[in-house]
View 1 (cartoon, rainbow, N blue to C red):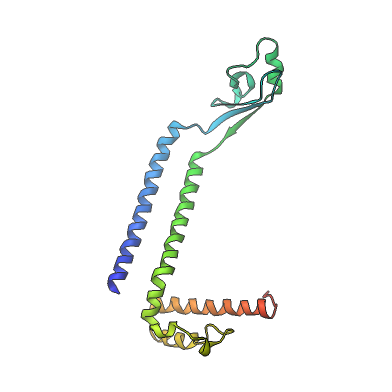
View 2 (view 1 turned 135 degrees about the vertical axis):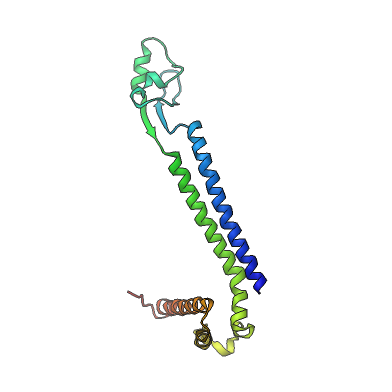
Length: 198
């Protein structure tokens, strides 16, 4: 069991180091990407005009130059129709922060990775810890002993033995069992008695 814990600790530290390295690498890329991509643009939406179909034009220019004459290139109409065409176009100056977007994505992916790691813990490590701490026979409950309305009937016996050990894992297990009992009581109140807690 000690080798399992050692392996899990190494795996956790390796994952956290790789997440840290990935974050640093992405932040370095952000500084390089800021040179390659523009965070400002002028977007002109021009509706159909005479025989020309509607079109959307984008150009990276300053806010003072954000108008049809500077953005629409090539101009689809000639001569006196240019002014009439430009009056129909709607031009907007748009600004964004790609650094903020990328940092938000990194935080989101980090949280997703932590949740995935927690799911692996719950599916693989927790059953092993339960068997080791409480014995395999206490995990298997028969329907004759427990009944449908009390799925955690022997939880108090298990918790009484776990309190005698001054171990962090036992405290976590106790809190988890207590939470399961509270959830079971809430389910019974809501679904059986139709009473909602305030």
